[in-house]
Image 1 (cartoon, rainbow, N blue to C red):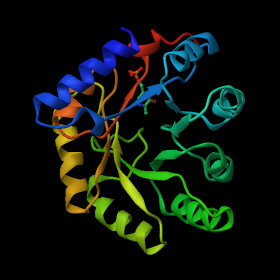
Image 2: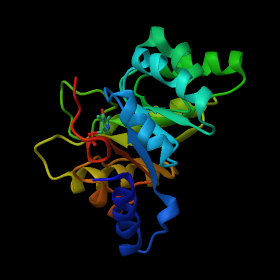
Image 3: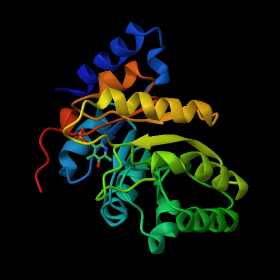
Length: 216
Ligand SMILES: *Cc1c(COP(=O)(O)O)cnc(C)c1O
């Protein structure tokens, strides 16, 4: 599918539930994609991208940022504490804040840099042992802890278990965000972004549907 088709589908999904198309941010997930494909999407005017590895993004985005104005890159993958500074220098948003040690590092470095990316707390809604994210039962306390460090949290992020109906997970994430006074919901990928929008997604992370199958 093309970028334009995905944008149209996202807009229709928003309007179907009485939301504005503008309230849904499409993050084009460019991880592992060849530069030609990324450049083609930039040339179509798209400016918001997602990467899941700090090092890969460091090799790719400074060059594109020198060529195209207004690019925003979101980190959607796990962040190791020792890469916090590099991530904060490169990314406009971090969707994987999931532990106090990381939050503390972000708070300290934000003071030094004088700016902070937008932050999303990742929630392991399926409570999967191998998956990153705060457990649902710990979300309220963790958001409170982040706020006590003066971190501004934009919203919550989840990656539902592959084999389960994602709608239940999206609804759960929306409920947790609401009770914590958070407006951002980073949820929905190529296979389920329309269902995520129906549940209130403000940031959808779509890779293969835009760029084609990842070749690695
Ligand atoms: C790769 C990735 C995506 C995009 O997945 P697609 O199925 O290609 O749309 C979204 N979110 C995260 C966290 C990812 O790692």
